[in-house]
Image (tube, rainbow, N blue to C red):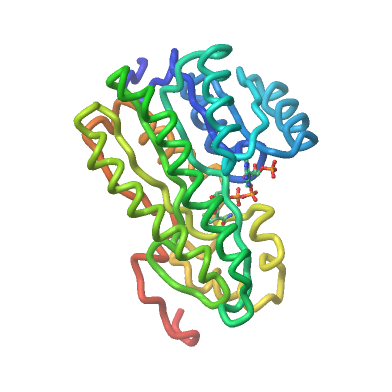
Length: 263
Ligand SMILES: NC(=O)c1ccc[n+]([C@@H]2O[C@H](COP(=O)([O-])OP(=O)(O)OC[C@H]3O[C@@H](n4cnc5c(N)ncnc54)[C@H](OP(=O)(O)O)[C@@H]3O)[C@@H](O)[C@H]2O)c1
C-alpha cells in the first residue's frame, strides 16, 4: 500500500552542501521518497564525485556549483534551477562550516565567516526561494541547526551564535510565511560521524569518550538517522508543523547526563 503522506514523487528538492556528509544522506532520503534532487556545493571535484555516487545509487540528480554566501550567484543559480530542472518545492539549508577557536583567540573575520555561511546564507537562500514559494502558495524549507542552537561549548562561539540564530530565523520565517502554506522547520543533528567531526572521532580522544558516555543512545549518529526527519518535514505529513526544530541527537538534549561511575 502506498503511503501518500510521505510521498515526494513529482517534487524537486534543493539541498545546499549536498556533496557529502549529512547533506548527501538527507538528499538520498528525499530521493528515496521520490523527489528529484538538486544538490549544491562549491568544490568542482567534490561535485563530480558526488554526482557519480548519487547516479550509481540510482538517484535522479542535478548539480549546481555556487557559493551560498554570494547573493548574485544565489539569484542566478535559483533562476537556472527553476528554468532547467523545475520549481523548487523543498529547500534544505544544509551547507555549513565550523571553526573551533577559543573566543579570546578568534579573529572577527573568522567569526563573521561562520555567521555568513551558517546564518546569513540560509536567510538569503530562503528569501530567494521563498519569493517563488509564496507566489505558488506552497513550499517546505528545512534549516539544519545543531545542538549548539540550544547549548554552548568551548571553542564554538561563532558556530553556536550562528546556529542559535538559525533556530530563531526558522521560527521567524515560519511565522511570516505559514499563511502562504509554506512550512519552515529545522533539524538539529546531535554528534554525527562525518568529515566535520573526524578530528574528534578517534579512539582515546576525550571528546569521543565524552560523546559516547553523554549520549543516551551510546553512539555517534549515522547520517542515515537523519533521513526520516528530513522526509517528514519535506512531506505533506508536516503541513501543519511550523517553526519547530526536531533534534535528532540520540537523546542528548533530553538528559542532564550521568556520573561517570553510573552504568
Ligand atoms: N556533522 C555533525 O555532527 C553535525 C552536527 C550538527 C549540525 N551539523 C550541521 O549539518 C550541516 C552539514 O554538516 P556536515 O558535517 O555534513 O558538513 P560537511 O561534511 O563539512 O559538508 C558541508 C557541505 O557544505 C558545503 N559548503 C560549505 N560552505 C559552502 C558555501 N559557501 N557554498 C556552498 N556550499 C558550501 C560543502 O561543499 P564543498 O564540499 O563543495 O566545500 C559541503 O557540501 C552543517 O550545517 C552542520 O553545521 C553537523
